[in-house]
Amino acid sequence: MHPEVLEETPVLEIDRFNLWYGEKQALHSITMPIPIYKVTALIGPSGCGKSTLLRSVN
Image (tube, rainbow, N blue to C red; front, side, top):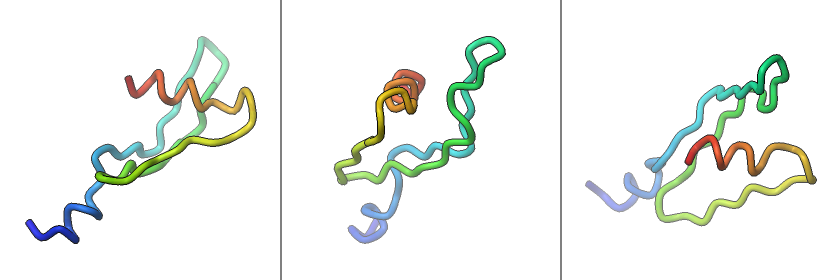
């Protein structure tokens, strides 16, 4: 495989992910590729779902 292809290939891809706690929807249609060999940061205000998304991937 060419190095260019590897760099464009996501190691993980989240596509239209939703998470519910009972009747409360915590995450709404999250879509994001996590590229291989790149640093990815989740940033946002307190309570926006960063940790919830990370826990659901784990």
